[in-house]
View 1 (cartoon, rainbow, N blue to C red):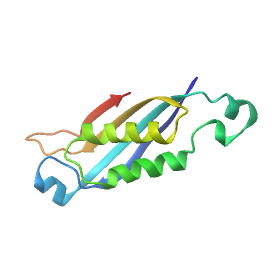
View 2 (view 1 turned 90 degrees about the vertical axis):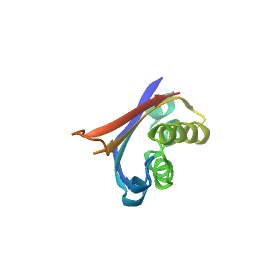
View 3 (view 1 turned 135 degrees about the horizontal axis):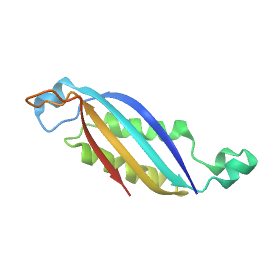
Length: 116
């Protein structure tokens, strides 16, 4: 078993609990780590023995492009989509960060991390 990860994917999206957040939009980042068997990729240099990074990115981008109220919801949607599209993936960890969340004070990011 191994971990394959994509870190620091950045998106500008319209998420948030408050209407103003969704209207203005904000910067988000997503990190994802997947546990899977990569023996075929490691031993024979075959893409079908792992996950295609570009496809993973496109799926996450699709989730991030749809408006949502909560980071927890976004993270769960990413997990469910990756597991459904890549049956070789056994577990998924997702971290979604919202930059400069609208709170009364200095906060660089609000972060939610979920795993399957």
